[in-house]
Amino acid sequence: MKINIPVEQTIKKRYSVRTYEKRKLSLEDKERLLAFVDNLANPFGEKVKIHLIEKTTVPNGEKLGTYGFIKGASSFLGVSVENTEFGLEAAGYEFENLILYATHIGLGTVWLAGTFSRDNFSAAMGIKENELFPAISPVGYPAEKLSLKETVMRKIIKADQRKPWSKLFFNNNFSTPLTKEEAGLYAVPLEMVRLAPSASNAQPWRIVKDRDVFHFYETHGFNTI
Image 1 (spheres, helix red, strand yellow):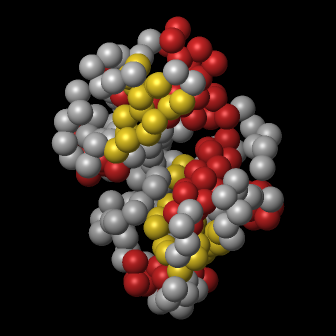
Image 2 (image 1 turned 60 degrees about the horizontal axis):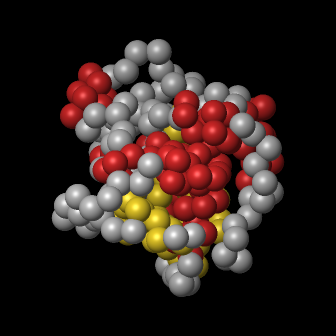
Image 3 (image 1 turned 60 degrees about the vertical axis):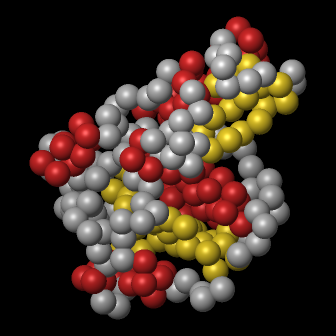
């Protein structure tokens, strides 16, 4: 699927929104999201399901909690997929495409993988027992003023900062940082990787260029640099 939005600019302006205006999605924005979902696809050939719910229209909607991390949101997106070899990759691919589209049309979002009441959201979204349910995101209109909790959180995790190239991308080995000149045509895609969201803004990915091949690694808490 080709996204007909300015992807590079959208990635640069996207940020995690945890404080929302207390109003529902407009019918127009809801229809735009659903129309985009209808055209989502992934390169892994997996069947991904996207869910959009509103607290006021699902049974026990008042129980849909995010442990105090989200304020004001009443609409939520979710993603589920069968437990297959590339299920999670496919789910992540489609859900991030949707997140970027929501950003493009002026909506706020934030990936949530652990800080939500999974059982209640599973019931509200109709997730099957054999399906993976990796993430949800509130979706709505960003509040002009952040909550105190969000302000503190963003400072703690340095949400507006990203690691420099020299800490993420390497040439041949983990001792030699990769320059943008050496990355060539891949410089822009790698920069988009550098700007991507991650849990607690940890940016656990490390990429090593070996001639024309790029190897992806995850730090798993240990320091590779």
